[in-house]
Length: 407
Image (cartoon, rainbow, N blue to C red; front, side, top):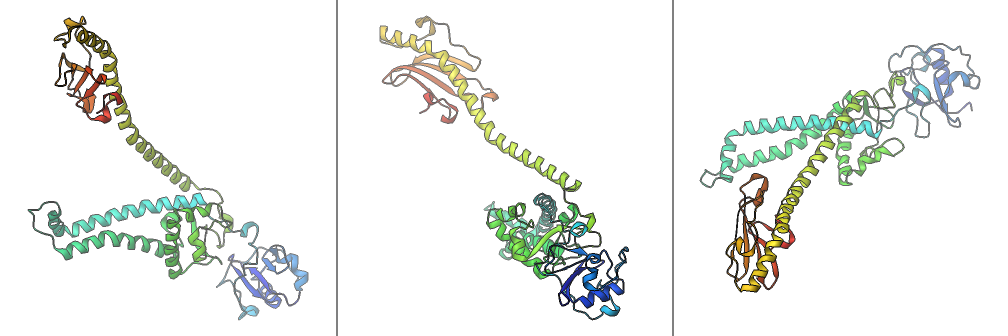
C-alpha cells in the first residue's frame, strides 16, 4: 500500500486528496495532521484516525488535540506544492463529528414558507411603488372602465403592465440566485432555519450554478410539486432541481470547523414556521369549506321552510278539491271549505281564489324578512283542479324551492 492515494480531513474540516503517503508524512511532521485527523484510502470501509494507520505510513504519533487551522488548511513546509483536490464520490462521508447532515423536507418547507412571505411582502411593496410612480398613467387607465374618459397612453400602459408582470419574476430570481451564491450560501428563509446550499464537494456554489438551480426549479413546478416532494425520500434529501444542478442542501454547520453543531431535527424557528403555516392552511381550508357549505345550508334551510308550508297546506288543498268536486266552482273564502284562515310565521297574507287556468288556488305572500333571503316578499301558490292534481308553484328562483315547487 506504499503507493496508495490518500484523502484526509484537515483541521478546518475540509476534505483533500488524492495525495501520496509522503504528503501525509510531511503534514504530520509539521503538525497539520495529528493522531486524531481522519484519513481514507481505497480499500478502507470508512474514515479512520491517522493513529490507527501510523504503522502502515511509517509514522510515530502521539494523540494530541489538532492545531488551529492556518492558511488554506493545506499545510506548508514539507507539504508545500503538493497536489490538493477533493475526494471522489467513492469516498464515504466522515463518520462521527464530521458526518454531513442533509436538510430534511420539513426544514426545507419551513424555509420556503419564510421566503414566500418575504417575497410576497417585497412584491406588494414593488406594486405600490409602481402604481405610485405611474400615477399619471393610471389616470389614463380610467378609459378602460369609463368610455367618456380620455384614452390612456399606450406606451405608458405597456410599460406599467411589463413592470407588473416581469419585475416580480426578476425580483424572485435575483433573490434566490444572489442569496444562494453569497457568503450565506442560503436565502433568508434557509438562513433562518439553519440550512445552506453547497455543491457535491461541500463548496459554495457559483452565481451561474445558482441561476441554473433556480431555473431548474421550474421542473419541480411543472411536475405538480413532485420535484420538491422528492426531498422527502431521496437518499441525500435532494429535490429534482438539486439533482439537475448537482447541489445539496445541508445543515449550516456542515463543512465548517464545527460540524458537531449540526442539527438533525427541527429547530425552534422551523417548528414555529410550520405551525404557523399549518394554522394558516387550516384557516384557509375551513374558510373555503364555509364558503361552499354556508350557501348550500342556506338554500337547504329556505327549501325546508317552503316544505313546512307544503305540509301545512295539504289539508287546504284537499278541502278545496272536495269543494270543487261538490260545487263545480272554487271557494271564495276559508269559511266555505270549513277551515280556519291559513296562518304561519313566514306568511304575511293568505287568500283563496281561482287562477286563469281554472284551478282553485291557495295564494301565500311571504313576509319581508331578511332571514328568508331570496324568498322574502315572494308568492307561493298551492292549487287543485288541474291535470296534474295538487300543485305547488312560486315566484321565487328554483334553487331555493323544493323539487315539487319548481317550474
